[in-house]
Image (cartoon, rainbow, N blue to C red):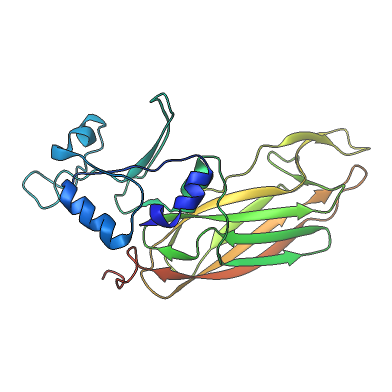
Length: 262
């Protein structure tokens, strides 16, 4: 379902999605017709491919209903058949949302009414955007925090010398939420005139990505985003600042038209 919603973004990024399931062809055909699936659904009879890849779900024993399903995950396969990347999680309930998958593979999905918040202190503008219109239970959704320093300013990265402050993004919520480690872009060596020290700095706009997994099945999920940073020019360093943003995202069922599972 999520792949179908993000099919234009995936194809724009040069990705042809294929879904492999242990379900028989007639069941897959009925599912595709009911939900308007336009990409291939492949039937893995007897879970032979699933077993060969070592991704048979060990939580479901032989003889139990649904035995033969895989651990949900994604592979990026090059045109020559080589597996270039793979994305799996320890829980079978967790998987990447379509926009997150596009970003993992080096693309960038176009927003469609995504929750967002912005602040600007005159030296650095900050925008926090959830790259999905809503949370679905167990899906990985990226929160992207974009920092835009005004021309001529740099931001510090890690490691920062004593007395200076690296750019740091933290996320909290009053709702059940799994927050993964923030992913920062690469830094560049940077020097401030008059200081005999080399900094790890960011030049120009930067994006910090925080993968999130909501454990809420209904209602809204509030996100409290705190961004700490210190800007500098070639001749001076500004005092450290902290920007605080709040945004909210609704929850939605995994399958449109169905109520959240209990």
